[in-house]
Amino acid sequence: MNGFLYGAVLQWKLDLRSRTMLITCYAVPLVFFAIMGGIFTSIMPETTDTLIPSMTVFAVSMGALIGLPPSLAEIYRSDIKNAYQANGVPLALGLILTNISAFVHLFIMSSILYCIAPIALDVKLPQNPGVHFCGVIILIAVSLGIASVIGLAVKDMANTSMFSILIFLPSAMLSGIMFPAELLPKAFGIAGKLFPATWGYAFMVEKTFTCHNLWPLLVIFVMAVLLCAILLKRIETR
Image 1 (tube, rainbow, N blue to C red):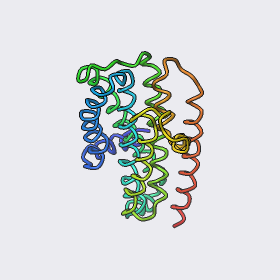
Image 2: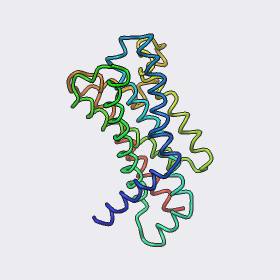
Image 3: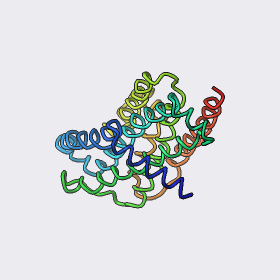
C-alpha cells in the first residue's frame, strides 16, 4: 500500500511538471473562464445561475479528454510498458496512477473555479453545494474513463491528440454549457446525450439529488471500465 501511495504521489508531481497537463487542466480552463465567463454574464445575465457548472464541465472535459490520453499513450506505446513487464509490475498500475493523479488535478481546478467565480464575476454559487460537488466527482470519474479508452485504444501516439479533440469538441458544444440544449437541432440534442458532459452538467444544475441524470453516467462509466480491461489484455499480449 505504501508503494502504491508513493507511486500516486510521484505521478502527481510528474504531472505538475508536464506542460500538457498544466495547459489542459489549469491554463486553458482559467483563460476560458476569464474570457467566456465575462462574455456570458454580459450578454446573458441569466447565466450567472449556471456559470460555475458550465465552466466546471468545460474544465473537466478539457483536462480529462485532452490531458490524459497522451500520458497513457506515452506509457503503453513506449519502453515504459516493457519496463513494467520486465519488473513484474501489473500494466494496470500505470492506468490507475495516471487516473488518480488526473482526478486530483481536475478536482483542484473545479474547486478553484467554485471559489473564484463569485468573486471575479459576481455569479451565484450552486444552491446545493453537495449536489454540485457530487456531480463534479462523478463527471471527473466518467470523463477519465472515456479518456482512458482513447489513450489505450489509439495505436499511434501521434494520433492520440486528434482523437481526443474529436471527442472533446462535440462533448463541449452539445452539452448545453454554451447555450441551452433545447435550442439545438433534434439530431444534435440526441448526439449530445452520448457524452458524459451533458449528463454531468444536468446533474450539477439540479437543486436536489436525483437519479435520472446519474444512471446514464454510471452506464457510461461501467462501459469505459470494461473497455479499458479488454484493451489492457490486448496490450499485454503484444
